[in-house]
Image 1 (cartoon, rainbow, N blue to C red):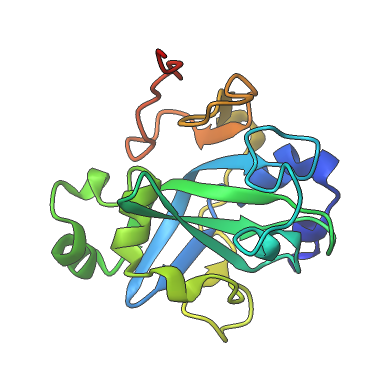
Image 2 (cartoon, one colour):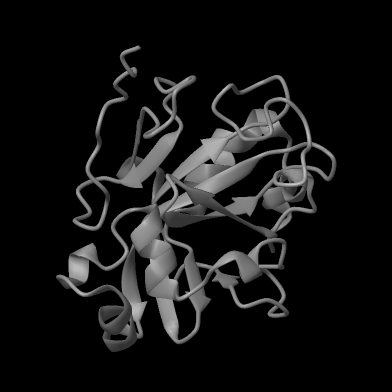
Length: 198
């Protein structure tokens, strides 16, 4: 059912598109994915954590596919990726935003704010699901970990998907590997990369 997650890194944009509409569940909350962002691996993608090869932090990105890659960013937020590609070939897809379709009350307790904001952005999505670093490296496919990825109840057609540049990365930020459902109110606001002044 999810063999497509193991597709070669060259197919990572297609894999990311296919994830839209899928649902991820944890700790009483289910989120329908409305925005994702793709990252390739070693030597191929300067924006990828695995660009320079495996490290203790990025080893999980080298497979197997279907595992969670959870990392801390900006000293304050956790982000969630699903590992893709053949084992030994790093790539991952950042889960950027979604619509809470089950467990709305629980998500409100964790996040606050309007319902469309509950999982609008990668840090908010993680907080709504109630996960943290313990989820890193666990399977999102077989129910053995805290997260479970499920096929869409409302499939997304190709003409509903828009592509744009990635967000919050210093390298390869103009690569159009951020995919979202057009017009969906839970998709995060795009902020163009601004180089730091030295």
